[in-house]
Length: 93
Image (cartoon, rainbow, N blue to C red; front, side, top):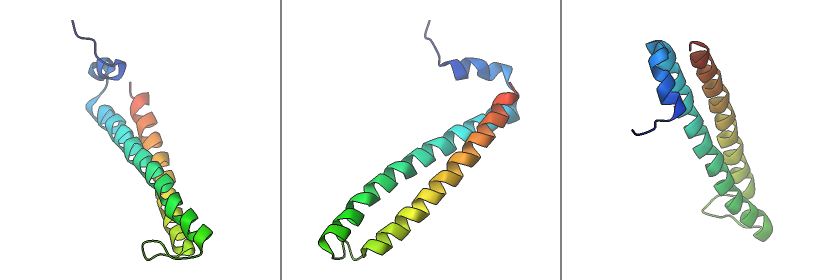
């Protein structure tokens, strides 16, 4: 017998709308994680731009910091909303 992850075994005890909220929360967490990784990748050209005092890929240091700020804020918002929706779905268990 193939073992399933615990969350999928509990699916049968959850109402459809609560399962949908839980999946939405997980998906939001995945996207927030990708945005966190992207913000780490943005640090490299920002540091190079600061260290060499030149633009990297056509953007200055402050432009890279602005992009980092936007991506970071999006990640925080998505993570917050995703966790909230996921908890609400999990409470429906």
